[in-house]
Image (cartoon, rainbow, N blue to C red; front, side, top):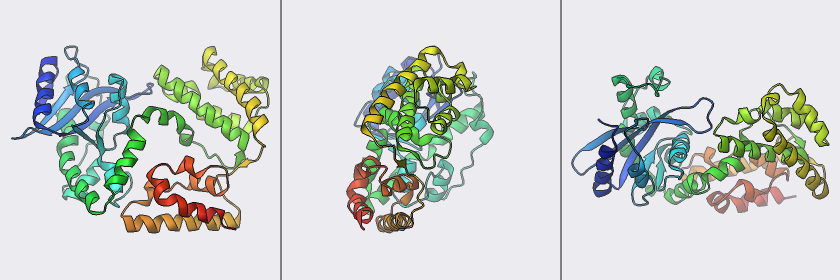
Length: 379
């Protein structure tokens, strides 16, 4: 294991990677408390230099290191970067480099396109692909990664997270070639972690609301979507967790109260214990957004119900048929159907509350769209 805390050592390692390796494994350790983006402590890298496997730990917090050479590796299209469950790693790397890494692979998503279980942990994937029992110490996982010096046990733990990644990647890549799913996997990766990664965090933020939405007013569902997007933008810009901008409970109060004017909205804000702490500038942005949306939506939309929980018998039968269709196709393709299915999205489409093109993008629409539309449109 090579511990790198000097710029010149990092440059040497990066030059060796460029000369000898077209694929590297990456993991990160970070803390995340009140920040939106994970606060990086170290970056673990593993690669084969033509003679031996090298494991390196880059100390991001060192005062004597500049990461420019490593950022060049992240932006190099020729060098594949293999992660496991890469979302927060990508966020953390984006925050310090201001770029989304290119040519990334994710073994967790690869496993799903090989028909394996959803959201497999790294330890479980090591076991299922290599037959190796790999135990992770949970105490070390949540240990203080900002404290220096790091202990030997912390360094060993961190290094272990990249020990098997390249071997697993090669095994899964062969399976994807065999079942002809590589092209779909690559399209999924591009949709999730391509150039639109940050904008997708904003666009889809309403899906992460932590309360049951139920069937609500169409107008107010659209208002909540836009409020969630504004909240996400502000959280990203200020690098704070979104609950500091506006809590889910505040959003729930708006959805349930359904204010008709800005005065009514302000009254909700005044009575909201969480939102009272928010600064006036942020409050005014939500009020201005609300004012614009109410005017626009009342002109353009009838106040119908936005349905995400089906009760109509005919619609429920169609939902079941769509589910069965997706499962049967995924079984033939050897893809985990969880990659495709989302009950809330499908219910919204069957009810007419959402367009299929907004829910099933890219390869999913290409493979499943035509038949799902036929089922939905059938009398």
